[in-house]
Each structure stands twice: as structure tokens, then as C-alpha cells.
Length: 89
Image 1 (cartoon, one colour):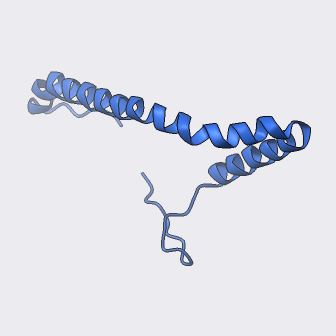
Image 2 (cartoon, one colour; image 1 turned 90 degrees about the vertical axis):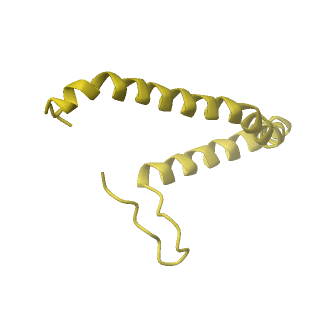
């Protein structure tokens, strides 16, 4: 896995090109919605942080379940690893 490159100007991780493109596309779609139906665009702008906060516990739960499944997998594969088996990665 490649480490994240650091942006010299901000000293933070540099976003991948696809992530930058996705942000641009979402912004352009929001601008189009603002032109077509500005009340709906403003409502979306106000509701997005609230929906993000509501979804946050489910993201934490997903990370916890993923970690638990990784632990169960490691426990099941422990005997094989002790016998010298190395999985292709």
C-alpha cells in the first residue's frame, strides 16, 4: 500500500484525483440545483450536516463489526499460520 503524500502548502495529506473530481461534481450539481430550485438547494445545504451526524453512530458500528470479523478471521486462521501457511496477498 502506498503512503499518503503530504501537500507542502497545507502540511496535510493530498487528496486523490478521483476524490477531488467527486467534490467538484457534487459542487456543480449543487450549483445547478441552486439555479433550478433555490429553496431545495438551501434545504439540502442545511440538512446535510444533520444527516451526517445521524449516520455517524452507524459508521462507528460498522467499523466495530469489521474489526470483530477481522478478529474472528485471525482466530480461525491462527492454527494454519502456526503451521507455516502464508496466504497470497
